[in-house]
Length: 408
Image (cartoon, one colour):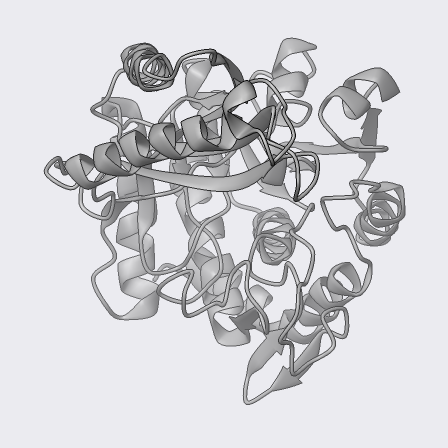
């Protein structure tokens, strides 16, 4: 390391306990989505950031847009620090988290530390990178390097439901237009591609009848079982297709919600269910939806007296690597490999993130941040979510050094 680089590493090390406390304060304030009321968390995050000397912009999303997204109140935060003329890189992490659920052995909002790991909902996904990115920026400011460009922190609150009123809204409102983006990730790989996702709601309509005279009705549940059988046959067929990108795997399909019927003694007149169809980057989202709709309607059409409606709930485009995002990823791979003492490479992940909104605006985007080797090891979206605090320190050094390389 050069003396400047060593100074950055020393700064992060000297402020590590403080950084841990910063993260703990964020974990202790619930920000579950649903229900999606984030004002308390944004207030605490703003207070902490201002305590570190930053000017924090609060951009409140209009209530009607928040409600349309299934949430209650949301504010996006932006911090900007200009080092000089040059490109802007935005560092984006989300503060909304899935509800804790059952099975915890720790307080989900306790930020308890045991054997070098902090436990709590959102500690790994992705409140950790509020802390990573904040202290990486502090390290760059303290280091006094001759940098040319601007660093922005984008802390948003709707990733768990699609990012429409977070990064997408910030871009649409013209509140930011970075040249590069770094989104929250894990420390042992740099993500350059991820799945897309299609959510469809299927409604099967029949005709109710007394259970003693079922032939006088049209059983929506019977028809739905036929449609579901078709969908599960399709799911098996997806296994034959696999992405060429390491870490992505095959397309997938899950029926995650189902409801219907009137009473035990009534022929069901209506059944609805929702489908989660994951798309690998090589797939065309428009063609996938068209094909899936055609299969569903054809299966439902086999049943007399039945009508079927298919409604799109969500279409999240896959994240695809570009020449510029690969170049950006190379900076992080090189620095992470040196700091972590093992080869850190690019890969894909079989999930979707807010990174796609920046990429859709033609902004080179990669994912990297604090965390263990996998979402499974972090217990992400599960009980006892956790983060190794040494990874928090080292990832912060990596982010600071890689951004320094970009803006040098």
